[in-house]
Length: 126
Image (cartoon, rainbow, N blue to C red; front, side):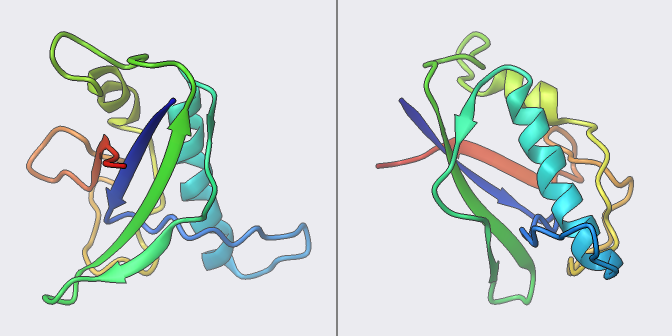
């Protein structure tokens, strides 16, 4: 089983809104998290124990930290990059970028490749 760590500038707060929820922020936050889950799930069955947590760096920038696990080892490996396919899969997935982020995310996508990168995924150190 492999474990992974996610650090992102995209607000992926889990709100679990019900059908009666009227707060558009809560609905959009959950939407961003769902988009991330779906991107990961394109190639792997994943699971997680804890929802993402929000943290703030010394410079005031907010990040969301999250961990997940998959059963299939090296499912995203391309050459020497163990996460190459996952980076490809997530890059360009639309998000709602106008939530509680401390930066303006434009274009409103998960970006794993450019100078506007807003999500970083790594093998978790256990």
